[in-house]
Length: 394
Image 1: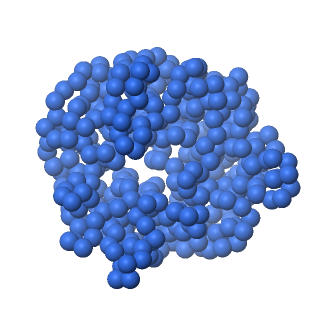
Image 2: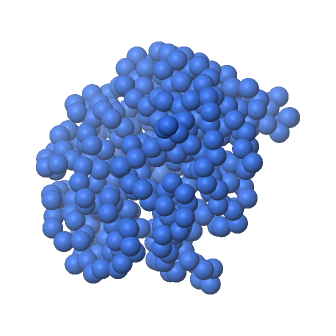
């Protein structure tokens, strides 16, 4: 659990770091790669693997064609594999498609493949080429959005054109992460476009979001049964009128909701911070607690959380709250200024899986990430800062 003694770990200044992932004792950072897949040129190393505890460079790559898929012991880019500890390159028998993610239940990856693209979802080991399982869509549909995975479920969305020619029909499929067997399928409302669809898994909860034009909708369901959990929709009915929302899937069938202040008074003061934090019961929409951060803690803040604590990063101030009670547990000022990443382009933020120190945080991430007892964030100075969120063991 975090303590009141929050201390600064390593800080890297003057380096253009934009995307992050962690695996075990390593931090992987790199420059943001354009959607076209073209790597930046003449800017020095593009991808760096660091020691997570110290920030020390372990090895670097000077040119890459996309952000890698990071697994427990290796990272993969296209048809190349690299040992995570040594940087030694090795051949892989299959290419790794863009948009692939690590499989949290094994050493492989989850990827959309097939011809035309997006017809097949496969769980495979790039190092050996072995396929753990695979599943395909029907002829009239294809996988769309992202693939999301946790230890409890693998989630993929299927899109098919509607008869009217306007928008697409979206179905959400859940698969057993070990066998790939279908668990349930649920039809969601029509989407205007596959662009903007996003899914996430946290524990026993699945969340699906679309926001293409600012008219966002979201749905939370049980990962094992597919049963809808309507609490967030009920809560948003009255919270939506108070300002833009950031939503994160919390533990034990809850969601942490941050409301940004968009009142006329805030606009006149040029203030765009978090006005309220709430913990919502996903089954019924009950508000379990509410916190209204001070102007220092909530001003232009980013939000991250674990199973125990919520962290607000605002300017040079880091504030921690108990996720169980909402009580403030710590606040500290650091000699750096955090870079703030508010839900762009989504009005609903779904954080990546929380690592336990030995696991994987799915990259690329542009906001702050939590791994073990380290909170890692970009800074306005152009580097990274790691903050230790628990007292050192004596």
